[in-house]
Amino acid sequence: MTKLNDHPPRPFESFEYTRPDLEAFRTSFEQLVNTFTASKSAKAQFKVLQELNSLRNEFISMYNLCLVKHTCDTRDEFFEAENQYFDDNMPVYEELNTAFYQALLDSPFRSELEEMLGKQLFTLASLALKTFNPSIFKGLQQENALSTEYTKIKAQAKIEFNGETYNLSNLASIELSSDRNTRQKAAEAKWNFYANQAEAIEGIFDKMVKVRHDIAQKLGFKNFVEVGYARMRRSDYCPEMVDNFRKQVRELIVPLAGEIYKRQQKRLGLTELMYFDEEYKYPSGNPKPIGTPEQIVENAGIMYKELSPETDLFFQHMNDAHLMDLVNRDGKATGGYCTYISNYQAPFIFSNFNGTSDDIDVLTHEAGHAFQVWSSSHFPFEEYQWPTYEAAEVHSMSMEFFTWPWMRLFFGDQIEKYQFMHMARSLQFIPYGVAVDEFQHIVYANPDMTPEERNQAWRQLEKTYLPHRNYGDNQHLLAGRFWQRQNHIFNSPFYYIDYTLAQICAFQFWTKDRQDHEKAWNDYLHLCKSGGSFSFLELLKIANLRSPFEEGCVESVIGEIRNFLDCVDDSGF
Image 1 (cartoon, helix red, strand yellow):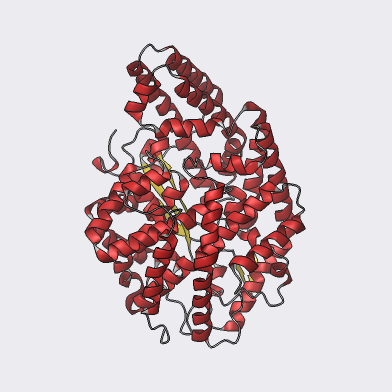
Image 2: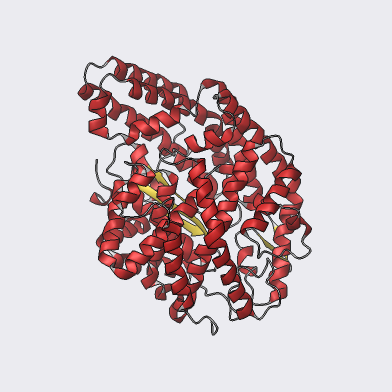
């Protein structure tokens, strides 16, 4: 396979989108699966697998190209229709891919193929077979449509504030105003938007839960929890291990997070830290990135050139090929992501710059994803180009810390202020992340809960994991509706615990990097180049990282962070 950096970059604007001809695709795919099954040797089957993979790559490339075009402008009618096409027809692709996986697992030459391809592909194939059969076809279509409906509600938000119209992304900078009254009013304006949409959002989610439960039962499972784990391709840990991890978070991280919030309250000179104060960290204001988006990208180029030869080549290509859409605008979907268009061997970074430090966090985070898939592009199979999700988040969250020495490019003499905030926020995120995960376990184990019962369950989890949180008299939030802002709950069920597991791993890389940068970076490079060719816990061994599930791991990591935070005098920030 030609490496991405072996040829001049092809600009994203020249990527050609063509809607896949589904019937032609089906015919070719089924013929190749039949040929694979009839092949008389592992070598012959391997050759057919390469053809099958080429066909799959073409379909997924068009899907991801459509995803980028649609999320960059949800009002574009052409790509809205194309997105609808994929919502309707991705179940067809899943059905065909399931046939491919079944043929692979049934091969009489399986042991020889495992020698050629590695065992992880077969593990992933086995998990995939648990999550599809033709009886759930309509359910998958409904699930896709509901996900799109939720995304559009948020993408097309128009929020009036102080005579101006904002969307959810650019209102965030106003929520960080140095004027407390402005922060409060901006937060209230945002949550008024969600309150006005609450009935619609709760209706969407109620339908989602019922559709997903029906899918689970048709697949032979008790509820959607098991389906969610199989969809996430988790092969070496289970809900009980996750539950034990959440217990460690409650015991070890929640108290430390509370101490950090107390420090913040003291810094700000407040008698009460309110929900609209939480993200405003310093009386002098949060550190803001220096310069225009173009200057930020230019400085990122300097940073990645100095970090390593590999990141230099990578970021040059991303920039030269226009593989980043970073700036917020009306009609653009919220959030940030990285995807990969395999036919063009092109990672793509999507974000919504809003003038806050989040612009740098999301750039380094998504660049971590993009650098990993760039490093794994030598694998012919999509399954190995990306690892499973929790492993993928190790790359992104660790990249946030590996780039710390260059934060002066973005924050000038506020670098120490930024680093303290970044570390504190990273740690404080974990209790929220596990609350989101536990909420989903509760919801899908009890699919007949009413919307109000779900809200009450969320509110109780907040009291457990976020006991500092003070909503004052905001009735929408007091009613337990904060969770309705979280994309992952709707669009990627059971994804969120992955961030918390990965954060523990990223903290380990941060510690190792401070002790021996060369060794830490080499471990990180090895991890990135391994792609998805091993399971999560196997990849951690490759990177010389401890499993977050291992007894004492969380405690040791938290000890290092406490020492760092205690050594910083934040009183003058």
